Length: 302
Image (cartoon, rainbow, N blue to C red; front, side, top):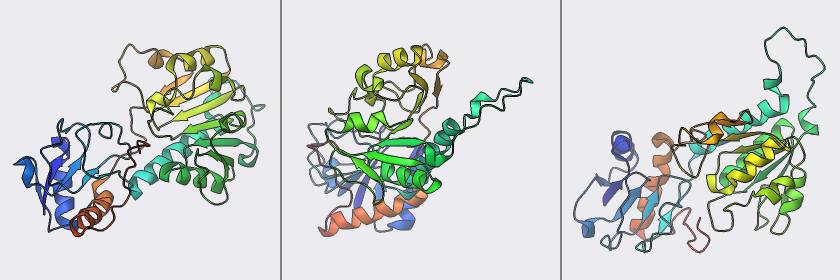
């Protein structure tokens, strides 16, 4: 099969080697006659503006879990699959768990200044309420890891689906999910319904002193609403890994705000050594006419 690698050039060496090992029957190319390709491997930074010439492609396989950069392209008629990678899931759960533990234990309270603050003792994890917005592969795994540590974890999923043993708030129950969230983790997809979901009104539903961790999608949080909630002391801290504009401009107020920690979109990355297994499987499925794994529902946007 002939496959177009429509991803940043910097990823070519790693991915060409990984695909050669996991799917040797695939011939990977960076360019060529659009009509000659059987499938496309896609990642932002290697965009194809017009997908209509690739009329014979049976699959567009995204290397990212999020597909908002391509799913709205009106020339996309080929089946689109999102990335579900064990390595990506591991890194996301570790990021969320690390920052949740930092917030829970109040690690930043103990300045090394000679002041003996032994009155600042955190509760046990079982007494700390965490809500995870989004119960997809990443959100579900994060909720399970935090519950395994002992946190009182609940999830929010409009469909009501979620891992066994986790309390799930469904569509219409977002206020209840937020009201209990001493630590709120957002792993929702980027859709019309989730844009500015955490606006001033919904941020006000969080308990006073809550911490927000957002490694999901930048558009979920209203920037001005978050800054106001922090300035008012309602939100204690926000850890942000994703933003409306990336890289985050150097003069953006998030950089200088004492209540915000900026991380540069490093919470989770697709690793070729683990993700190539899924890519190879989907390429074979597409060529043999079998169902594609993790097919995107374009009406929902993910």
